[in-house]
Length: 314
Image 1 (tube, rainbow, N blue to C red):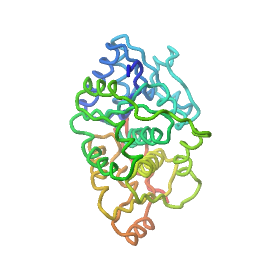
Image 2: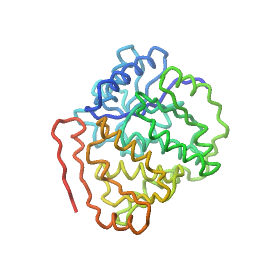
Image 3: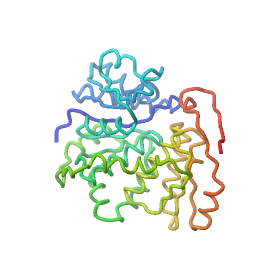
Image 4: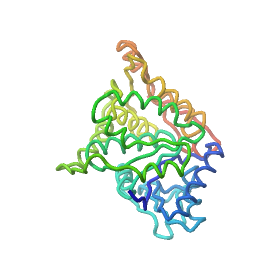
């Protein structure tokens, strides 16, 4: 397949190490130099901003997608807004849908909860027949290695998971990764079932239900991991306060938790984000942890500002 437009998922936090920012800028420049349009989340902060500016510095075509709620914020890419290179949508789910639609493939650079939500959503939508596009993880400085190890468990869950893994590629070299995506040959045709757009939004809608009923994850299939990743990002955005519990009877989530702490250490998520879910090997212990859960409200400006705050809320 020929990639003319690439969706790039990555973090927007300004505190990420400079190495990741430099790699993002170089990747944006590479896409521009190879006449590949960059499609991304529209921010001018963190690695997101570096990606866009790297592409623009080489005369590249860049398309941003942002929700109305943040279009006037300082960290939105003003030049793209002025040039009409920004799609403004009503909400986050619509933003993510357009990001999938506008790219021939996708690559994820290091990022936080929002990025893994997009990765597993992309895989989930693929097995549900919304698209048949490939996605790659650019494993800069082994950032994704714990998550990659965790993903290995997904392969054992069934045929749909194997189908999803067939569309997932990993490399630490951006040029090699793009080449892998271009060599991808879909093993299934897109079969748009009736009401597919409603169906693919089900996970996020169920997480957003106005209830304090816990979100409990019990399996390592694509759907459940997407549910977990989506719940974490909604909690980070303070859109839900529901407890999130993971029943980890076989300790398969150890690598996932290791990735969470890696993301916190590299400042793609705030230091309090690892507290947003509880894990236990026994159901009784998990229920006790859920019962003791206190919602941690995160000030998202911690991702850009030096001031760090923790606001417990019951």
